[in-house]
Length: 342
Image (cartoon, rainbow, N blue to C red; front, side):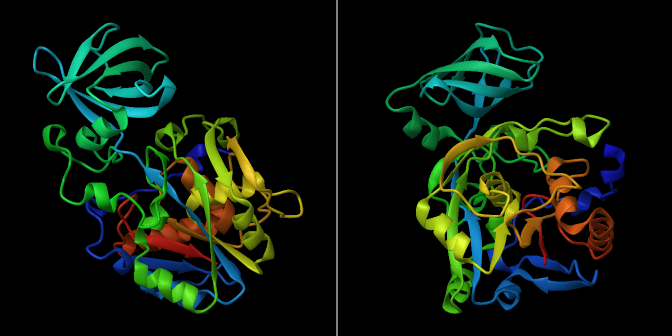
């Protein structure tokens, strides 16, 4: 299966730079797999497509303010994107941008008293960075860290925290800190929509998957099958597993919830409670064991997220839906509109 077959043209102006003013007022394309029909709705219509006996599975991982702007002694700026801890609260694997003139031993300043020392280069893109700060590192990160927005959302490096990004690049039900990117399908939920869903007797099961560096990694192999996903930590509580297993239909909110469910399901679709890491890679030809309906955003060309959505909807139908979304001027990617595949 060739990666080039999962490409599409997108006008740059359709890449959403800001979230919808009201979370639940985003547009929602409804794609029906059985008939191939496509409807254009608003996200606030989601409850009309659900029924009693359904279970809505959400990812309650919380995005940490993982983006730091550091300064060289020369005044040049370096953006540090934290990936995960490397043995202590102040030692992290990270991405650096620009990384061409960064060397091992370089000391950068952050804020008034914080310092970041480049310990070593781990790989072509990853670095090991040690921090020295006053007090707890979590408190330092809360003060100086910025929302780790993806690179296609443009923010000035010297003033990266625009009004609302720390709030809006976070779901309203985020609880467990650990992600360096948002589970973006969940960004559309408002308290009103969640209340409407629960009012008709639909269960909501929170699971956790900490979105990691892998979400930024493009698929670069010529053959789809040759790509390797980064491992990500997930957890499912016994209470959530019970709700999911008792459901007549499971609606996964986003590709992250989908990956949790499919990683934890046995061949009969029963979900096992527990925690683990998963590098599950879902692309066309995959047989879904537990997910019946998928709510997802519009994804980058040639990405693992687009491949997962193609596996669920069918490649031809998804290509048709994306072409219609472009023609109808939907807003794409993390801060954009969404698609419900039923």
